[in-house]
Image 1 (cartoon, rainbow, N blue to C red):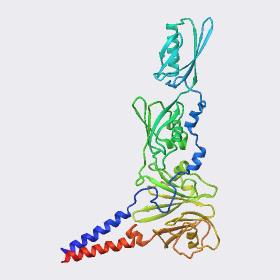
Image 2: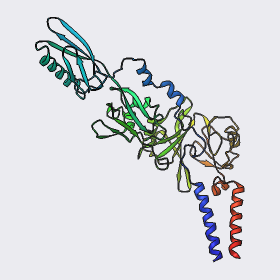
Image 3: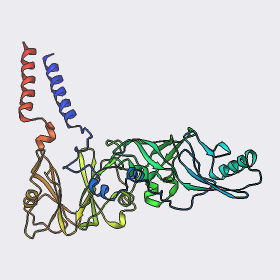
Image 4: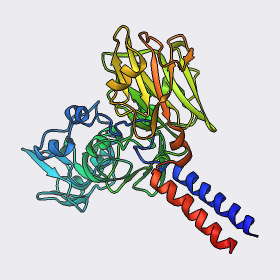
Length: 410
């Protein structure tokens, strides 16, 4: 019976180690350290703040002529009405919060929810029937309304944002300070004003320019961007790019598709050979992908995509500052590891591998490196066994087992 108790305690201890090893799926749990942001500083320089535009009452910019049959009027739209009889009468009017327009000497007519074409017919009919039966009436759309729309989910600043009736989804996302790194950009749900639901694959617009995947909106509509699951549909991007960090991939997304919509290169980026680190069970597979294979190479959950520096050496894995470094003739692996700040607490310089440009792998730490080589510092053996537990914690655990065993033996 005592032996059974002892076995049970030992099994429980190692199950505890396994739980300590299981990733917590936060933005800093992958190999090495990386920024989870997508170059926020550059994004802030480039993006247009729609709230600022509205505060300055700047005219709404339009991408093309507004279709009278498709544009739906709402509170805030400004119309110009010209009534010509013996003399001309020109009236600027605005749609009220209740959806009416007030025409002096004529009255109120409701146009909420009508297309501009339908509203013109309704207004003309109202003027002829109630005031000026023989007048020539012309109506123009002078200015587009602004309103608030709610964005929830995986954006950096969820809540209400102010847009115009012609602004598309990309402008709405910018007004919400951009996507969260873990946003499922291909699975956005829009709750329309009439209560229906519409699925939007925004990545389709990013990759093809399809405007159906970058729609416009009306008041009271809701945009929901779901969070992706880091444990089931994410990859991480490292190396010579501006936007290193995690990203959510579409099912069966290829490397080419991912690079086209997610990567922000710098001058030193080298795309001639991208390295993919893929975990298969307890093993790691290192894959070099040539440009000709980008189109056919399917990404898997957990892949780490490394973009090397052109004619440099990349240091990845359990080091303080993973990334690409300038090539120095005669330098060995430990020289580059030192440039990367040394191994992290979880890594061991005794467990490293060097991936050459031709795809071969070496574990010779005295190998003279060449341009394009990649150094990967692996997890130490003790860390693999005990996770983040300290030596004192390990000793205390085994002491607990021993004391329990002695107690059970009496």
